[in-house]
Image: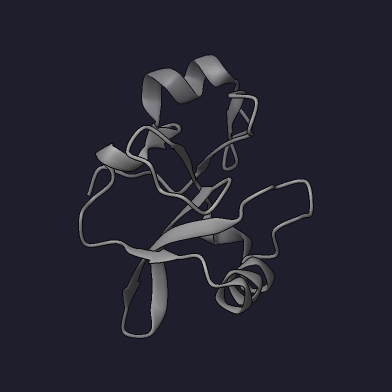
Length: 105
């Protein structure tokens, strides 16, 4: 899987590693940063229902500043294994998505 759950990029494109706190340059060189819908794995599930979105936001303890209206998720054995947040609810192929660390749970 080509994903690193330690990276978070805010909506302005500034990236940093949640695990080690290093800068955007580190995130660009060593980690996977924001990508587009077109580049996500095809087997991810798209969540845009407001109740499901709110439930996931609470499970991941997302702050109100993290403006994600929908998510792409992978689930294994009833647990989230990968989560990508997206502003808006229309998953156009060129729309940016942002990896969300599962370590915050």
